[in-house]
Image (cartoon, rainbow, N blue to C red):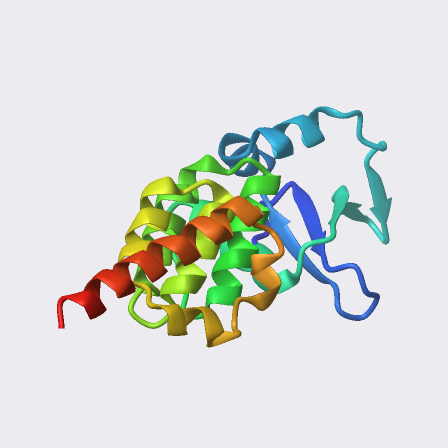
Length: 184
């Protein structure tokens, strides 16, 4: 995202030295996100030139450069969407898509969440509950066992769901496992 015809720079990252500039197009971002559309509607400082070069407006965003790069790859036309292989990346993308109200990528992210089901059923349940994906939460609860709670990879995420959702999961799994033992 270093195109010459971009009309705004998104500066991602909050730590100096760890920031990255993305030269992007206001129109594409505005079409994908009402938050960006509103952001660009605010009066901008007057155009400046430096050494005869036109300076683009800079919008600082606190998101990590990696997450913003991935979000841009999802919303830009003609760019292949990236493959998400880590649950932590998916969670960061869901949070960022939610923050900027980028609804166009939610279906892809929900489908990606399902790919983690065989390895992390409890994690899928937790993430689905956090983001209100009811069907995905139900599907995860159906395949999870009590041992999946001990996975540990989603300990931080559990803090973001209600105790009711957690209790519902534990009771459902215990009841299913009890029924399984009574058939033996």
